[in-house]
Length: 148
Image 1 (cartoon, helix red, strand yellow):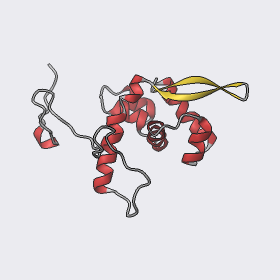
Image 2 (cartoon, one colour):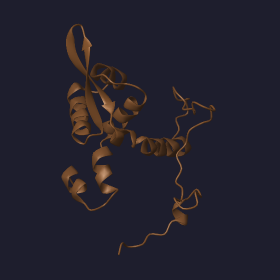
Image 3 (spheres, one colour):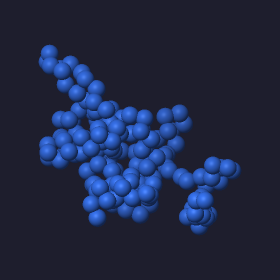
Image 4 (cartoon, helix red, strand yellow):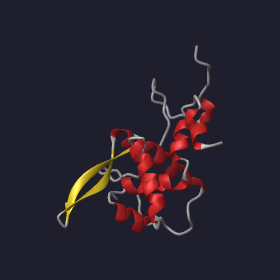
């Protein structure tokens, strides 16, 4: 099934999967959330080819996950990539993947960075909760019903 096929399905999971399913996209977003903003910095920190990086950035720009912001360097206008509101809203998605990865696929060696709450220093994890009562939920706690 192609990207266009996934993106056109009437499903709120298949459409984001079409956008985020390419492996470099999630790693690129990780770098943006870590503060990387410039093309050369993405390329050097990720060891990604220029053509793949250009393609991934263009998709994220087209989908309005990122925006290009001009800056001056050596008298020339250059651009850096910043998250839009739509892009910042992907943070819980990345944190959910990280939380799952820490539990089930953590490397034997320690990661090069840890995430901590700025105010209290506590660790960071993703959770799913009920919008009504605030209870933390698992798949067994959720009932699926057809829209009427």
